[in-house]
Length: 65
Image 1 (cartoon, rainbow, N blue to C red):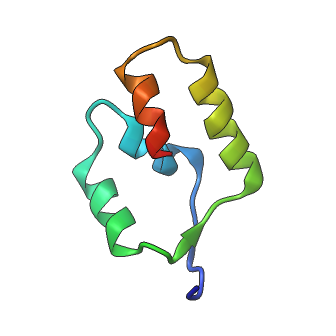
Image 2: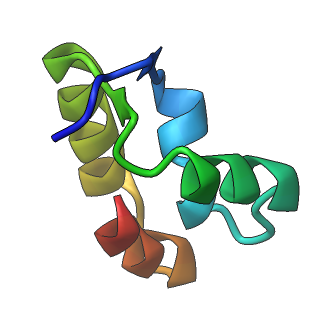
């Protein structure tokens, strides 16, 4: 594992699950793959948010998180 340069929040980490994700965000995530991390609290926030969603395409996209 390389040096972690970025600490990401839920708004960035949830972008791939959006119905129309921002291409620039996705490009940056791909560009810096492996150079970022998140806090455990953020991870739990994302999982909890996915569990609250009604059955939908968006909830299905939560598997990307």
